[in-house]
Amino acid sequence: MTKTRAFIALGANLPFEGRAPAATLSRAAAALGEAGLRPLAFSSLWETAPWPPSDQPAYLNAVAELDPAGLTPQPLYELLRAIEARFGRERRVRWDARTLDLDILAMEGFDGRFGDLELPHPRLAERAFVLAPLAEIAPDWRHPASGQTAAALLAGLGPVEGCRRLNADWAEMAGQGA
Image (cartoon, rainbow, N blue to C red; front, top):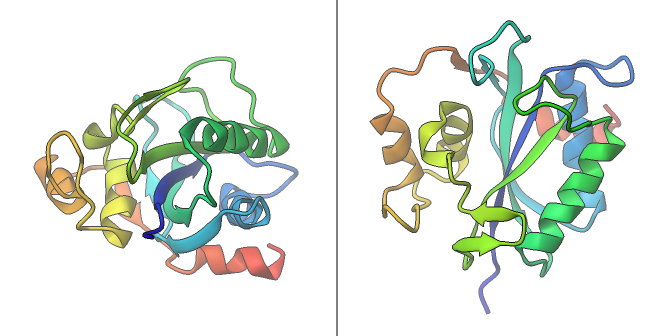
């Protein structure tokens, strides 16, 4: 039996408990593993401009490829929301600055509406801040509707402003108590 892969976007642009967003993302990567989700790959950290454009601080973004441990989309979504809450996430205003954002981008074998979410993420193909890290770790992943790979979707955006690759080994800090 083949394992299902889930691609999870991680993002943050506010400090939490006196730690910078990079440390929060590292701790969140560890929390995913502690919750039983086996990490298969992590992208580099990417610094990106806020979306939509605003005066918020820049975001740090990454994508994790995980084995969802048998969870289907809605229970995985609920688990991610619980992890966000542990890291101080409050959902008040759409696209507001945040301590942690965890979104399911896609799950193999799941295409369509599942409770509170739609898979793949409905705006995935429009956003360099998720496509760049996704294409880094899974360039051949194919969008089920368009059939395009992550790399082709990213290339289709043309020149990408405000998105630059940073640290490739940030997730390793998670195992070191960052």
